Length: 87
Image 1 (tube, helix red, strand yellow):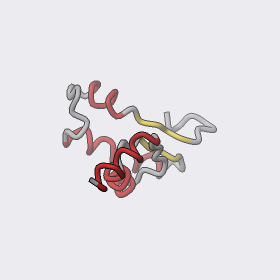
Image 2 (cartoon, helix red, strand yellow):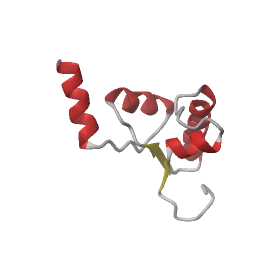
Image 3 (cartoon, helix red, strand yellow):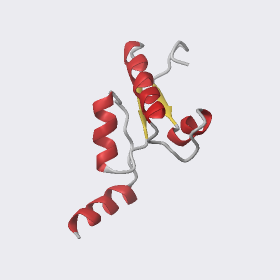
Image 4 (cartoon, one colour):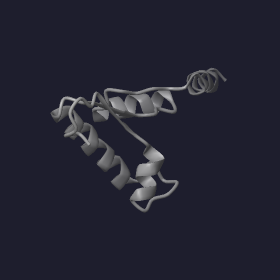
């Protein structure tokens, strides 16, 4: 995928990745997380932004530290996270 001309961004479906690796429902499995980090590294080397949906501020920071450069968040996760922290 990264070798396709004019690709600007690679979005990883985290649940799809985990399922394809035999870890359905376990997005945090160490092998899944290692593979995700490898994807981010290879995308950076290819000059392509790569990322995954961050479902919380903690996820956002984790994936950013792994090298993700595209980290969309839903408003529901942002607001929900802020409410959980406030209570």
